[in-house]
Length: 168
Image (tube, rainbow, N blue to C red; front, side, top):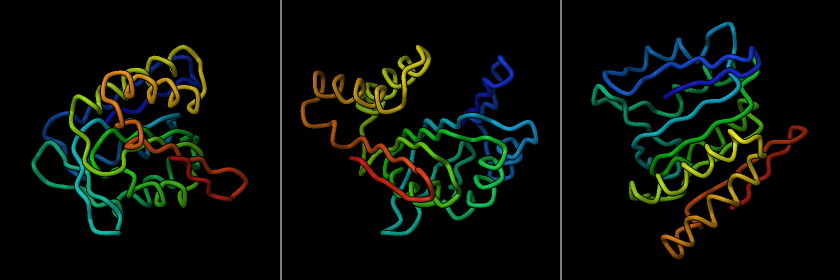
């Protein structure tokens, strides 16, 4: 996991790449607030329930355990969640209910090369100041070029005026 805050014209990083456990969610609820959350890792399905994110200590974090932390983070400015993991689209309803306006996630199982091919253009385009829909379009184009048919694995979701809109 890492979180980025650009409101203060600085970048902060909370790296959960190893030995991470669910108690590390304290980083997400930092009172300074965050603009975005990016999870690059593994996920597991839960059969119609909220998905699971694999943590560095070998445990998994159920989406239900993120609910309160996401709501607190959103109240402090969290505006974007990028989930690069298998079955991460199962977490979209949870994020939208927490009030997060923009999300990008994957349907189904996603091989690592496809996840990488999708998220590099997304992060690059966001860094250039493009919108998430524009960044997602660039990612889909890159996926189709290198892995034909894989662009449908990427799911863009937006929340506007308390109504939920999903775009595949």
